[in-house]
Structures are given as structure tokens and as C-alpha cells.
Image 1 (cartoon, rainbow, N blue to C red):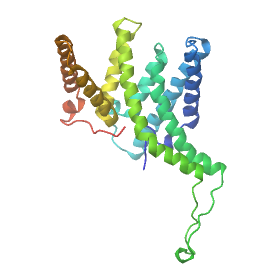
Image 2 (spheres, one colour; image 1 turned 90 degrees about the horizontal axis):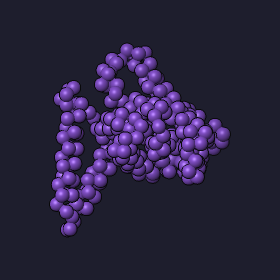
Image 3 (spheres, helix red, strand yellow; image 1 turned 90 degrees about the vertical axis):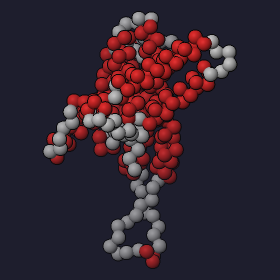
Image 4 (spheres, helix red, strand yellow; image 1 turned 45 degrees about the vertical axis):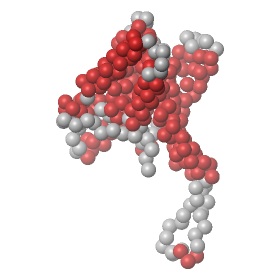
Length: 274
């Protein structure tokens, strides 16, 4: 079963994902030492998003070419914008050209870890280590049957890791994307450079993710539940409750007003698992 909605192994760019991961690790060292504006840190930051843009750009191009070859109908502009690969491609370009937001690197890094793990399991290990033939009972053997090869224990371990931690990691990605929106909002409040433009762009991106990702929806639901518990506690000033209720109402109105599927075909866009 294909685990990833964003990138398939047929369009996989392992060196770009590996570059992205290495750049995040190197940038992390600069961030921990408060040198995130050094030349090396800025180089790693830009190279990480350049790698991400290249990876998603290749996927988008191959998808477009595949539709052309098969004669499939090309989506409308709104249909293209609803594609997750295009959304992440556009945001990678935005992060590449705008001021640094280190938190933006983490979702791309988590996706890359799983893609590298899957590629290693499916391609690297079988290439480097010759698979051993699995033992087949004599009664079940057939002269015309193809040899059956056993998975290497390392490949099995990687597969178990992906299956065990994928859903939890996607939930972490969703939480990071919401936290990043809060970070951008704070930047906009204090009028940091180009923060209001970024807030508008990222709000549209997060709205699209909410429409498509059950993990993002669950993260927002958990955030709302925690907010309800905090505001509903005894001793909470009425003014705080009023502000909180106003924020919730505004969020629901924004959700309803930006439901693109409702305006296009009368139905909401299909939801995906990540």
C-alpha cells in the first residue's frame, strides 16, 4: 500500500531529499549556537528549500506529462491549486525567497525522512545486499514458479518503522504547520518585513491542508478542545471567554467562506489521510 500522498517512488529524488535532511541538520547546529544568520546557516536554509522545490517540481512536471501522454483532461487552475504537490512546491518557493522561518523546514524534513527510508528499503538494500532465496516447502514447489526472495532484516526493520510511526509523524507535521501559522501571525502583529504577505499566503495554504488532511483537522480539533477546557475553567474572566468565542466564530465563518468546492461543484473536496 502506498503510504505517501505527496510523492511516489516513481518520481522519487533521493539525493534532493538527502540534501534537504543534511541541510536541516547543519542548520540546526547553527540555530542551537545562535548563528542562524551566518553564511553557512543561510546557505543551508536556502539549499534545503531549493531541494524541496526541485523535488516537488519534478513530481508536478511528471504528473503533467503523464496526463498529456494518456490524453487525460487537465485540471482547471483551481484543480491544480488543490494538488498537494503544487501546494508544497509553491510554499517551498515562498520560503526560499522570504526571510527565514526555521520552523518551516521541519515538515519538509519529516516527509523526506520517510521517503528516504522507503527508498532505502525498496531500492538501496536490495541493490547492495543480494536477497537470499526464501525456503519453500517441497510440496508447494512448482518447476515453473519464480524464485521467492526473503526480505533483508534491515529492510523489514525499516518497513516496521514506517508503518509504526507514519501516522504519528503526520500528526506532528500538522501540529507544526499550525504552530508555524501562529509564529507568522506574531510576526505580522509586530510588522516584521513582508510578514503580512506571508500570513495571507500561508493562511491559504493551511486552509487547503485542512480541507485535504485528516491529521490537520484532528490537530485543530484537539486545539479547540484544549481551548474550551481552559476557557471553561472557573475563574476565567468573561472578557476572555467573549474573545475566545469571537475567535471561534470568526474561524468557522472563514472556513465556510473559503470552501472552494462548494462554489465549484457544490461539494467539498475529497479529504485525504495526510
